[in-house]
Length: 226
Image: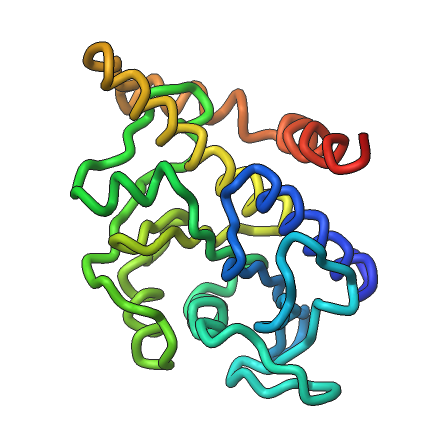
C-alpha cells in the first residue's frame, strides 16, 4: 500500500499525463480515497493542472473540509465524495473535460467499443442532466445513476471514471477518449464495426491485467520526462 506522499505523487503524475493528452483541462480533478477514513486526496481547486506538484494535492473529508490548512478542493468535489460513499470498492475517481467524448454526449451519440481497448470500459452511461455537480444532492444523484459501473459521461460536460485505483482510473479515462476520437474519425469515412458482448468479454479478460495497465501508464509517464 502506498503512503500518503507516494499517493500524492501518483495523482500528480496522472493529472499531468492526462493534461498533456488533452483529456484534463484547467478544471479537471483526480482523487484517491484515504483508507480507513472518510477522507480523500484531491488536487486543490486553485491548482494549475499543467504545472502540478505534490503540494497541490490536499486532503479533505467527504464534506470538502480541508484536513490540514485552508486550501479548498474543486467545487465539484461532490462527484468524488458521493461515489466513495456509495461504492466501497472504488478507491480513485477522476473527472475529466475531454474533447472527443464530450462531443458524443453533446449530440446524444453513444461511445461504442470500436477498438479493443474499449472492451475494458464496460457499460458507458450518460448522465442526462447538463449541470455542474457542485452540490451534495447532485453528487448523490450522479453516484446513484453510475450504479455499479465505472464510466459515466456528463452531458455536454465531461466524464467521470470510478475505479479500484489511480492506475485503473487513469487508463480508463484515456481509453474513453481514445475510443471516442477513433470512432469519430471512422464515422467520417464509413460505419465502424462495433465489438459484440462476447468479443468484449474475451478482450477484457486479455487486456485488464496489471502489467498491461502499467504499460499504458509507463508509456505516457515517459513522455513527461523526455
